[in-house]
Amino acid sequence: MTRTALIGLILASVAFNALAQILLRIGARSAAQSGNGSVLAGFADLAFRPAILAGLACYGFSLLTWLYVLGRIEVSFAYPFLALGFVLVALAGWQLLGEPMSPARATGIGIILVGVLVLSRS
Image (cartoon, helix red, strand yellow):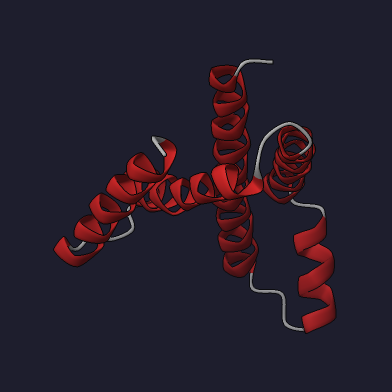
């Protein structure tokens, strides 16, 4: 498999991991709004929410993809790409969930992007 194809799989793994975070946030937020009183009932309610189950499935797919990649490329090359997950989650939280995007957060995202670009070219 070519290095370019492996980078594509790395990015797919990161994207599914970020999607998992967003789905888990959606599921957790909807469960919190339902207002179950006890902790145990709250956990049971969380476990079967569709967004939670979809998020867990995305985590599973992300993990399997990541394991495939790690068998074929140096971890020191692949691992820095995981920082893109911070970028994707912050942008999705801002655009899809209405979470704030401060200038400091936007600057941090830019720094992460530059860092990943530098590392991916080494």
